Length: 422
Image (tube, rainbow, N blue to C red; front, side, top):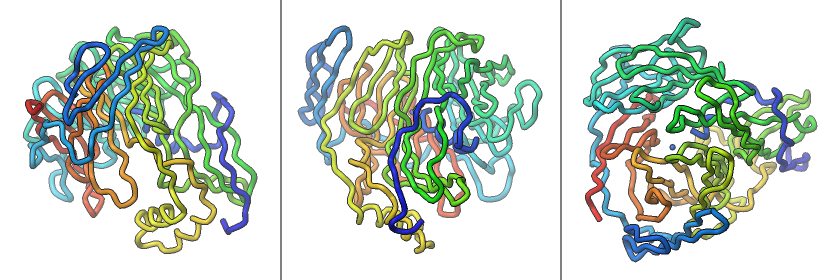
């Protein structure tokens, strides 16, 4: 693209048919969605004098929170070093990780890693010693297709589910590795956002549209459609279409769309939070949770000052993403600027029902802070995470996640979490 060529920002119309997005990109999009001391109703006081206000509005609980000072901390402590590190550059193949889709910890402390590069669920003890591997690539029972398993998480009854999104299915295993069954998603749904407590599943699919005109560039925002499926995969209820994540595309002269990284893209998040399902974006600091019947149940807000990115911010971000490719800056002139930086990074629920929301790092910021909210949505304070670490799961006394080193070698790490501090 050169300066002066047409550029648009649009939200495609809702279509539940294959569009111009290639399957691997659909996987990336769908993969996006899948982590004060509380007083009584009406308010709570917390670390650093935090205040939370809880009110009811036509059956919707609205929780408004103040913003913790960036130099404050909740008092919960993440250990100084990992308690277990899984991964190696060379050596025993059981420790060579490739395309890790996620990780979880079983009740007995074993760590299960979704290693999509080999189509396996790899099982390690609490110290990171390999015990066994389940599944494998193939079409048989308990086996996985390409780019799978793309994730792993608990399933009701001390079992676990492994995602196989390109085949629109999940595989369910018992805690001892016995393959139970395949749940095939019906109704056009492709991705499971998580299991509900009664065995139903929260699912999503990407709505796509036709590409723009040849020779144009655009920042698009495909919708995501959500639904509740029965335990057999059949559709119980469609929840409707919601705003998805932003993507920047260059459409070549022959009409082929080519995705390019965009530094400040605003994202969509969907996951199960207790008996509710979260469907939200980080356009603003607001987390929306719905009942399985589709009605809005809770809105959690936190004070946030929006800031608009500048062209210099965009150039600096592209330069950092491409330190060995100065020519990448040529595309910056055609990239649109979003109205504001994302209000937060990621959001997920821990095993105890707390919400963890990652603070978005503005240009020049290096902190790795998360705001923790109690199970009702009242802010407790800030916790600092280890650097270069992507959180996969937060338990009662541990944090599990992934990391890449400077050579691109993948690791899964477990860190201790001490919640005893005030």
